[in-house]
Length: 472
Image (cartoon, rainbow, N blue to C red; front, side, top):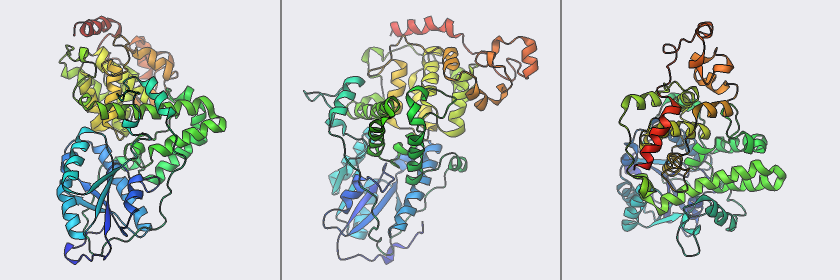
């Protein structure tokens, strides 16, 4: 993106609107973009703000994906005669300056439900003409409520109410042409981001559409059976694209409904339910913003968590001695993403085996996940820890051995992410500490040297965890 001097701005005689881009990096089915183009305004100013308050939190993978996605969006805008303007600073200050520079009449943005976003938008709306549009979810959280107006806190009735609402029948196509930018309007440069992440994930609306098409062409048919298999490519991997709105929630849901109508049955229905889980957690955060600071269940807010920094570090680095746990954590560090079954396995291990505060894991995920979303991440951690809304019972403790054997039966996933175990026989791939010495020598893995011994005995720590939860 070229940076131009601010002194030579040419204003058109007709007013323009600012499209304030946040989590909607797309042109198709973008309600905020459509609303920006409506009315008397003939001009369009697509703007992304590098907000220091948001960029201060370390999230290198997610930010690299975002920068790449913004470059892809800028390319799509330029093909249509427009372009992306990037500015740095607090949003209220940036938007006020842009209105002064361009004479923009309105600011339109897609509504976000996080507490920080709502505070930010309230401050902007108090000083500037800000209009918020839908799009982050298929149905706004305020629409999916009980008859008395109170929010659902259990998934199944939420899902039924969600499905009972009118379906969107179509999506708005991307505009063929867009109004040109004002002449001479300056734009800041985007950061470069991590080079490695630019190769792991291809960002942008085009890449999102291709992922959806690939999923619909194959894996969705067996999704109900394969979605939990760590060793198979059985999921859509659309979560990073949904996180930044490179594909809309409506596009994904419509694809699921169409797949159901085309006879893909259980797979498509299961995928639709997973999309509704995303909407459920967005609704929980919207109605109960305090979940980002504390457990939803007040009776489980005072568990006596252990202070064990070495155990935490072993978990973070994939050195627990439990292959499926370590492979999942290495997947996180290697590609900024983790299979959903893996997220449940490692979360259960941190909280239920190591008895460490679930918020430590939640923060670690938000630091490294490309798709790190406050609502979904918090909801998933509280569910596994058994402290949230509609959570798994606190006494449900995943057995990492059984999880590995069931969802990576031949050990292919473990061998991919733990190359030190690539020669371990399948019979021992999830329990390498049981290998006789001659087998260890034959496969080049001496327990405690090439690969660590388990840092805890899963069977032994169960009672410790149950006692801590009961004594909260």
